[in-house]
Length: 153
Image: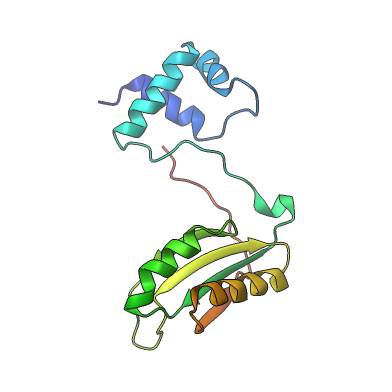
């Protein structure tokens, strides 16, 4: 299913693409294949589940977004789905997911928000609380960001 050209393409693409009007053309030129073939190969790899997505990653700290908060919510079974849909629809929320309760940790719904200050993150948490009706939550701020890299081939 995957051939040497696919592997070569993935090895080149995993290091990022140039910010240009025709990034797939640049990848194709590097490999000696057409822009269309690059697009088709990436599409087939994605459809086959070999790659999950092909997308830009933004360095949010470089944009001045330095406050990152995970908000842990204690949602009742009746609130869970409605609140999850609500939270996931809010622009400031980048991640929203459910986890099982732990014995000494009663929170089961989590959102991740990013902003330019901790105060802004706290305001977002309060707004989400008011909109959802969930009053019990904890805001946990990131203290350090480790280097993020994707899986490598």
